[in-house]
Image (cartoon, rainbow, N blue to C red; front, side, top):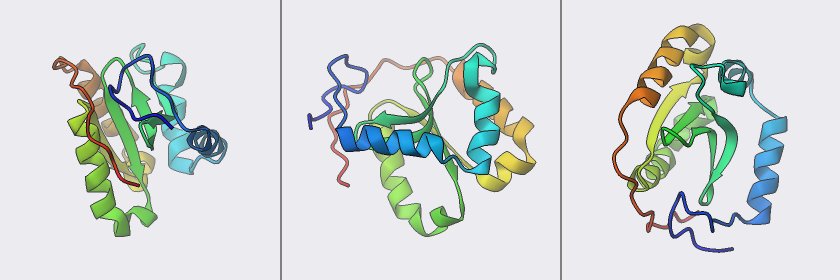
Length: 139
């Protein structure tokens, strides 16, 4: 396992166990993840490329757009008790120069158009210069 010295660096290495877990999560998507993925996959949203269950350091993001450095996390009922952990994850990702957009299952299922509009707004924002990711997130 190699420390992530720069988030967008070519030398980034991800532990094998994390790669396996990301593959499992892709195969076991929640209903909300399936709904959003159908809108994001194959550059369907304004030609922007998204990845699902993407490894970022020691984390797995539900969806990630490298071009916009945007992480999209869908929070389900299990996340209600994990707000502190989510805040730590968000702070770490933001320290790495990433934008984080959190939405709930209910928002995806009942307000998909407004979620997609917000995603488009986020990917259209001008990017600030990339920041080195020197913070380690303890798991």
